[in-house]
Amino acid sequence: QVQLVESGGGLVQAGGSLRLSCAASGRTFSLVAMAWFRQAPGKEREFVAAIRWSGGSTVYADSMKGRFTISRDNAKNTVYLQMNSQKPEDTAVYYCAGTYYSSSNLDQRSAYQYWGQGTQVTVSS
Image (tube, rainbow, N blue to C red; front, side, top):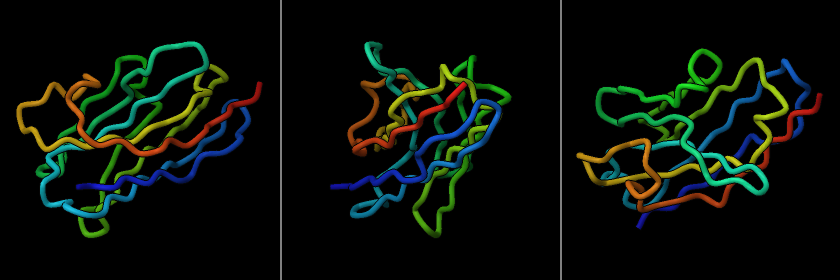
Protein backbone atom coordinates (compact mmCIF):
# COMPACT_ATOMS: atom_id res chain seq x y z
CA GLN A 1 0.00 0.00 0.00
CA VAL A 2 0.94 3.59 -0.60
CA GLN A 3 -0.18 6.55 1.45
CA LEU A 4 -0.34 10.04 -0.04
CA VAL A 5 -0.58 13.19 2.06
CA GLU A 6 -1.10 16.61 0.51
CA SER A 7 -0.20 19.91 2.12
CA GLY A 8 0.24 23.54 1.18
CA GLY A 9 -3.31 24.54 0.37
CA GLY A 10 -4.86 27.74 1.63
CA LEU A 11 -6.25 31.12 0.69
CA VAL A 12 -4.50 33.25 -1.90
CA GLN A 13 -5.42 36.39 -3.79
CA ALA A 14 -5.87 36.35 -7.55
CA GLY A 15 -2.50 36.67 -9.24
CA GLY A 16 -0.72 35.04 -6.32
CA SER A 17 1.12 31.75 -6.00
CA LEU A 18 0.93 28.59 -3.94
CA ARG A 19 2.99 25.42 -3.86
CA LEU A 20 1.33 22.15 -2.98
CA SER A 21 3.24 19.14 -1.75
CA CYS A 22 2.34 15.45 -1.81
CA ALA A 23 4.40 13.11 0.34
CA ALA A 24 4.27 9.42 -0.48
CA SER A 25 4.97 6.68 2.05
CA GLY A 26 4.71 2.92 2.19
CA ARG A 27 5.51 0.87 -0.91
CA THR A 28 6.68 3.89 -2.85
CA PHE A 29 9.04 1.80 -4.98
CA SER A 30 5.97 0.50 -6.80
CA LEU A 31 4.96 3.93 -8.03
CA VAL A 32 5.56 4.79 -11.67
CA ALA A 33 3.90 8.19 -11.84
CA MET A 34 2.15 10.77 -9.72
CA ALA A 35 -0.43 13.37 -10.62
CA TRP A 36 -2.54 16.23 -9.39
CA PHE A 37 -6.26 16.46 -9.97
CA ARG A 38 -8.69 19.05 -8.73
CA GLN A 39 -12.39 19.22 -8.02
CA ALA A 40 -14.40 22.41 -7.75
CA PRO A 41 -17.82 22.46 -6.06
CA GLY A 42 -20.44 20.89 -8.26
CA LYS A 43 -17.92 19.83 -10.90
CA GLU A 44 -16.18 16.65 -11.94
CA ARG A 45 -12.67 15.94 -10.75
CA GLU A 46 -10.31 17.11 -13.48
CA PHE A 47 -6.73 16.37 -14.40
CA VAL A 48 -4.13 19.04 -13.70
CA ALA A 49 -0.66 17.54 -14.27
CA ALA A 50 1.33 14.32 -13.98
CA ILE A 51 4.98 13.34 -13.70
CA ARG A 52 6.83 10.06 -14.05
CA TRP A 53 9.23 9.13 -11.23
CA SER A 54 11.81 7.83 -13.66
CA GLY A 55 12.99 10.45 -16.08
CA GLY A 56 10.63 13.13 -14.83
CA SER A 57 8.58 13.50 -17.99
CA THR A 58 5.47 15.59 -17.47
CA VAL A 59 1.96 15.92 -18.82
CA TYR A 60 -0.28 18.95 -18.32
CA ALA A 61 -3.89 19.76 -18.94
CA ASP A 62 -3.95 22.36 -21.69
CA SER A 63 -5.59 24.96 -19.46
CA MET A 64 -2.82 24.63 -16.85
CA LYS A 65 0.19 24.93 -19.15
CA GLY A 66 2.33 27.95 -18.44
CA ARG A 67 0.88 28.65 -14.97
CA PHE A 68 1.32 25.34 -13.17
CA THR A 69 4.50 23.32 -12.81
CA ILE A 70 4.74 19.79 -11.45
CA SER A 71 8.02 18.51 -10.08
CA ARG A 72 9.34 15.72 -7.88
CA ASP A 73 12.01 15.01 -5.32
CA ASN A 74 12.78 11.32 -5.54
CA ALA A 75 14.86 11.33 -2.37
CA LYS A 76 11.92 12.70 -0.39
CA ASN A 77 9.24 10.74 -2.26
CA THR A 78 7.46 14.04 -2.72
CA VAL A 79 5.71 15.65 -5.66
CA TYR A 80 5.04 19.36 -5.89
CA LEU A 81 2.62 21.56 -7.78
CA GLN A 82 3.71 25.16 -8.18
CA MET A 83 0.73 27.32 -9.07
CA ASN A 84 1.35 30.85 -10.32
CA SER A 85 -0.89 33.66 -11.57
CA GLN A 86 -3.80 32.07 -9.84
CA LYS A 87 -7.38 32.81 -10.80
CA PRO A 88 -10.61 32.48 -8.84
CA GLU A 89 -11.55 29.56 -11.09
CA ASP A 90 -8.57 27.65 -9.67
CA THR A 91 -10.52 27.34 -6.43
CA ALA A 92 -10.93 23.63 -5.75
CA VAL A 93 -9.86 20.72 -3.63
CA TYR A 94 -6.58 19.48 -5.06
CA TYR A 95 -5.85 15.76 -4.90
CA CYS A 96 -2.62 13.89 -5.31
CA ALA A 97 -2.72 10.50 -7.03
CA GLY A 98 -0.27 7.69 -7.71
CA THR A 99 -0.14 4.78 -10.14
CA TYR A 100 1.96 1.64 -10.50
CA TYR A 101 0.92 1.00 -14.10
CA SER A 102 3.65 2.01 -16.53
CA SER A 103 1.31 2.13 -19.50
CA SER A 104 -1.18 4.47 -17.89
CA ASN A 105 -2.90 7.29 -19.66
CA LEU A 106 -1.74 9.72 -17.06
CA ASP A 107 -4.55 12.23 -17.59
CA GLN A 108 -7.24 9.70 -16.69
CA ARG A 109 -8.61 9.26 -13.17
CA SER A 110 -8.99 5.55 -13.78
CA ALA A 111 -5.20 5.20 -14.17
CA TYR A 112 -4.57 5.86 -10.48
CA GLN A 113 -4.79 3.41 -7.62
CA TYR A 114 -3.82 5.68 -4.75
CA TRP A 115 -5.32 9.00 -3.73
CA GLY A 116 -4.65 11.54 -1.04
CA GLN A 117 -7.31 13.17 1.10
CA GLY A 118 -7.12 16.48 -0.76
CA THR A 119 -6.15 20.01 0.17
CA GLN A 120 -8.34 23.07 -0.29
CA VAL A 121 -7.14 25.94 -2.45
CA THR A 122 -9.22 29.11 -2.45
CA VAL A 123 -8.38 32.01 -4.76
CA SER A 124 -10.08 35.28 -3.90
CA SER A 125 -10.81 37.95 -6.50
